[in-house]
Length: 292
Image (cartoon, rainbow, N blue to C red; front, side):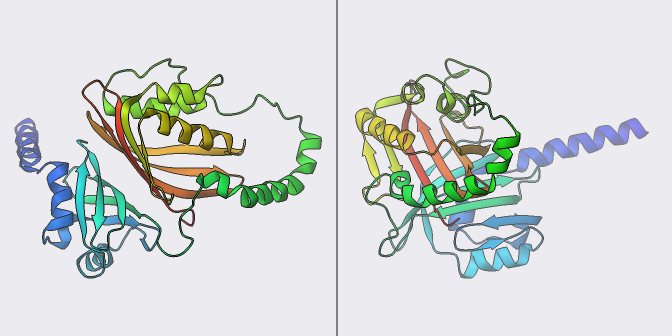
């Protein structure tokens, strides 16, 4: 009898899973339709540069979503199976990106949304890291003062820095999740020519959007290469771009990430990637806020 009950429960679980709507449909419901509070899990987490609701209060998140959160029209949605991301534009014209993860019951457990900055001086004319050189330089100087004794007591290895995680020369496959993981965990840490490794995964007609820039769109392989070179040239040696989580899409993938710099774990961001039929990155939107 115990065995029979186990089988019945298993069948019910399978039937329940079959009834779950796709992550893409769930995203559509979140953005377009009315839904009940139970669409959020009992312990959801919502975060954005404007507002963060730590886990434990689905009512607050639900109320914010239904009454205060800006109306956002979906542009692109990735094809993740367990989590999903999208790009969007608000009614005021500001653009952004979202990452949403779900539990086994299809309920929302985590949301990160980042909208492009607004207001006078909110965006950068030049490369973001180049524009922040004075700030990062001061932070490094302060950090250097506090760690001077440590450097005397402990001999630092100048070669001790981030390295490719698996030493791959190319992505494991042409699927979005493998290409994007390669960009974050392998290519950017290549000891010889990280920009070359990164650009090997972009199509000739790719478009890259950095929403912190005044001129936010970089169109074509050469323009994106210059953007990547400027970013690399202006990144402090002790700054790290760290992948936190990613969707498992085949043709498109959304990642959440953060920057580690001295003792600071900021900014945090959302980046959406889309691949063409040849498995090359053809579209990227990077949404982040240096205050987040």
